[in-house]
Image (cartoon, rainbow, N blue to C red; front, side, top):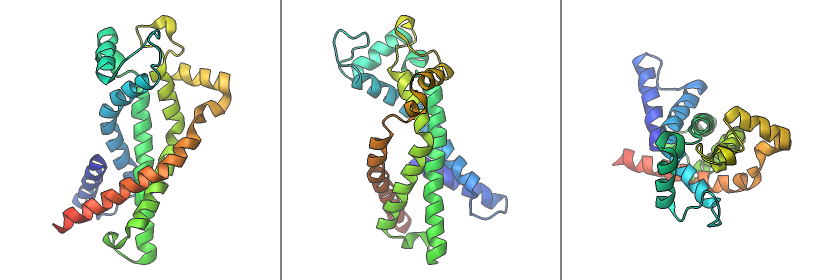
Length: 221
């Protein structure tokens, strides 16, 4: 959220410098979120990779068996290095974060600005309940638009590591897309979407409500 706010503020400052006023266009809102997503992917890529490896590491006899985050980090870097190993699946992660965060921020800001126009009020007058509702809507816009990318990322990051060519199913993003579609059809790209959509409104509603509350406190102090 800090990255999102920073990118938004930078865009508004550039608009003012160019004499266009503080209001951002839909494209600028999307790109502000997308830029924050790319920055976030530097951390989220390897963190999610390790998390996914741990979640799918169940048997000691398994080729990629890890007993904890530290063990996973050490073994992945030892076998494949940082770029090819730890950052495995990073390109599709960047694509997911770029588009997902773009839609996330665009969805939320569009709903907030629409509320202010309809109610003729300032941002600080929007209640916490509304912020939670619009945060939930933003979460839906993010996941509904980026979930296929997330599914491809997960498949790549649960596949064999680059050095384990004999145990790998997918050899790149396009190969993964082709094999998912051939074997499972379009439904393969949406596997697990329902539980994600059930969880999303709670998480994202609380996130934006906390964000708005924090920003109001900081602006008033």
